[in-house]
Image (cartoon, rainbow, N blue to C red; front, side, top):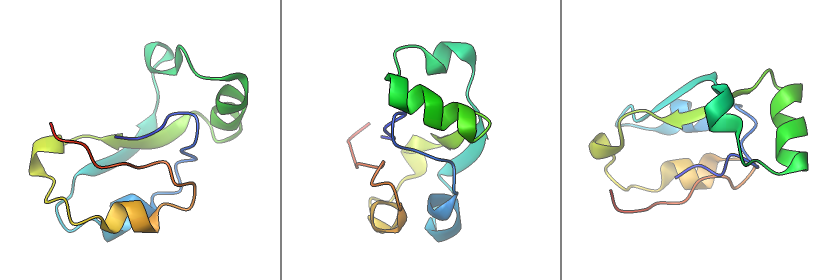
Length: 79
């Protein structure tokens, strides 16, 4: 799970994930709904690009992404 208010799309999760679970792309307007003011401003500043859990069922729950995320925006959850 990725916290939309924290993620800055730096892609460390993409780099370290051995299971190819993540992509980085622009969030849709619907995905940006409900973000905090600070989260919205950070998202705007980074071109609305954030990490996306594109293939959650491929996750091996190794936790490398959690450790690598500089914003502490990732938490492991069962699908």
